[in-house]
Image (tube, rainbow, N blue to C red; front, side, top):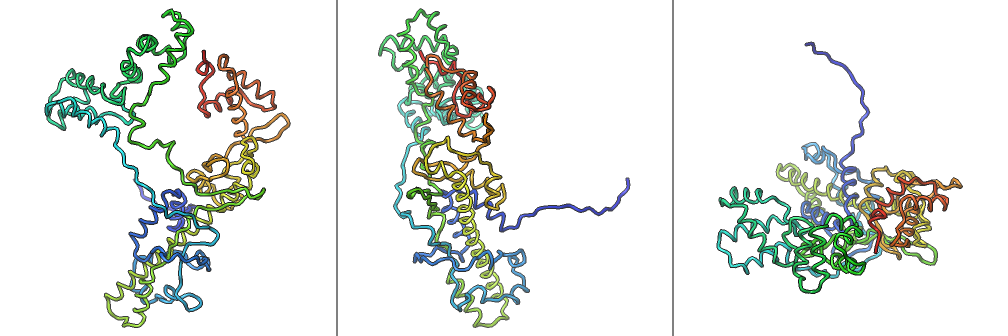
Length: 494
């Protein structure tokens, strides 16, 4: 084995701490920006909110004046102390105390000071645990029942094996339990509210709910029979086979279907949680159509009133008047200098974040102007990340960070920025159109179809081609799946 030395040249791209900070801030949506700023305020006493609510403009561009703390300045070395120019931290060009704030008059005030009521809820698991008290269990059985409830998932299902629950009880509670003992308690818990709780699968969940309704009519008993014997056929909509085997009339099978579709497949899903689809979205941008002129506004939460602490600047001014040889004083000054550097750096990052958001959204509006004026998805143009990157001069990864986590409110609704990006598709005339346009037309076709004879993918392909869109059947199938639309057989109604 021999050792040798060699010289190699490598081209590497290394992000500065400032760039990394900006990338992280760009990913933070408006709803979470306040929490991120709060964390910074807690960590850095030299950064503070401007409680007086001044409406001064930025004045100087901080990016030109300040490059952020370097590794040397953050180390707090003796040389830093000797070479530090304190006027840089406490005086501006006019001889006045500089005020590094992030409020700009371009961003109007919104009423963000309203008190938001805190929603007090009982979680799904708490609700089930509370009902255990009705069973009058001894201490051993209560621990077993608690373990069962603790094993339920957020939808209310018990998807763990009985052997796994028994192992948990043995290791964590030192209880040796037979599986039949666990099964008996599961049957008890399945009588709790909400109906269907503690089921092992969807079939059992639906049957538990139907059992509560026995006596409400013959259609309930038939629905139990269908789900017990022909569950797979029902999920695949093989209604003719079910009708034939159970000798049901068209009216009876319709009543059975109506009974089943009213059941809740997620008994625990709507209790004690805010569904993600129902979560309030805080828009990052607002676009207003003012007599044909589109006006863009950044949510005021993105422009907080931040400034460098006057108290820290006052401490540096006091240092200028005092002796400069005391070691403890040197350490204190270097600490203050580091914190002020960090505060200025963070304020600069917030400002750059605002500018990046505005530039990116402005470019998107310019590219999709017809949509923002009309709200018609068929007017959307093909647009990829590269298009916006070229317009703004930003990196594609930067545009991607903005598009993936930000929302814009328009008069037609609130959209994620990612919504406006789509690939292109050619028409017979050679025109490039957005795939979003094709999906909209496809969605309209399916929505208006005869549900007794739903359109197959082949038929949809033919109809699109007749409209001039060069599209293959497999592409239609892909778009249909992206629209969360099932195949024709599963869309059929009796």
